[in-house]
Image 1 (cartoon, one colour):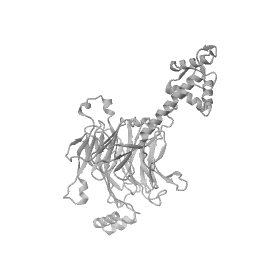
Image 2 (tube, helix red, strand yellow):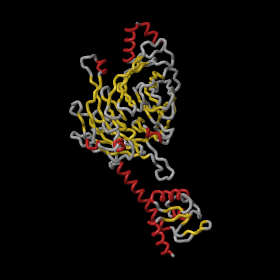
Image 3 (cartoon, rainbow, N blue to C red):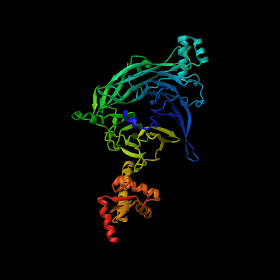
Image 4 (tube, rainbow, N blue to C red):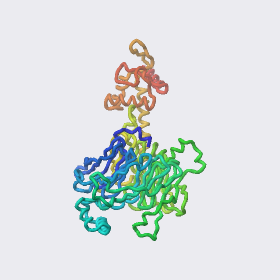
Length: 542
């Protein structure tokens, strides 16, 4: 997205969880993919992030990562329209210093624009040379022996060929009205391949056209694809399989749009372009066999049911859950939460406003599910500082730590954060409690401003160099008052607090300089609303 250009160059744009505490990070300003391992010690409860290894090969910054299967394969798309398939080998003993092949395939110029998102439809199968004996390996060996003879099987084992490497995924550029379905298959003859040659190849399976630009995608199983459009619609694509074909070929059926999810009435289509852009679906995720979550550019989060009348072309207007006003910025990511008991479903959302929210709702037979927020994290911890930069959450991913599921979030200031989930769902909605705390902070600031305007005399005529100023006070007096009344622990904290009062509440303006400092020469004057209180107090004391 062009909106991401304001992010820090060091910020992580994509996180993928592999398993066993291992995860991958990538940045749009970096050509290297890094693998990490997060560990939590049971005795001290200390959490550590250990670097494992790098994955190189891209020539430009990496836009997105996507996990393919539990064997460690993942896809990476970069700015030069190239997609690469890697084997992370996170579950191998030589994960840190592997001499085996890790780059399985490099697919160049797959679109006219850079690919912004990838969703895996079918993980396929993968048989590496040192893999354990399982059904995939037995099947691959038998198939190779039947096609090319027993000598080919021996040669593949000696030369360490990849016997099977297949998958299916869908890609989205975020700039076109078409999303593309791709298939990956292994190269049959690998005898003359070099260490950097592709052991698999990709082919275009089908183009899925939409009425407007597609900004987000998601996939579930082998037969469902979600596409979020810029005009606020979500299109559900389903694979049509031929039941008369063998089981292995049923997955090769074509895709068709079976249902559209839209909460916008037709009368609202007559809008300005910028108003329509705010409706764009920027994040999608399946959270259950029956439900999926969508996040929009305006910050709205909605939960939809995939069940319907099964009539092709059906339009669903009513969302199962609508959450408006929770986020004030673009929803950058939605993610399925940990499994819960009973009929409860959980999910998390991240936004450009810096907040990460976790919700839970109960599936009801007649709909009308009511969500409840059980975790709020605002990454803008220094939101009262004057020279702060607003922090955005770029992505999030769940990671398993022992018997708990935590969230990994990346922010625009270059940090990766770990958010632990609560042991139980609180009785009070966490979002309501958070807003109550913010309101209390605002009331506390107004109380401090009121006390400062009454506690500091400002009716004196003070001189600065050769000029006299009436109804003003010095920064030294204000800082002393804040410390003596225990509104601030140190004089440095008192200076920052006084600057916040000026920026947030307009308490005073500086006569000379841009901000208050701890000096008798720093002269300030209360604004009209607070000046009356200060003068009234000064007259009573004198």
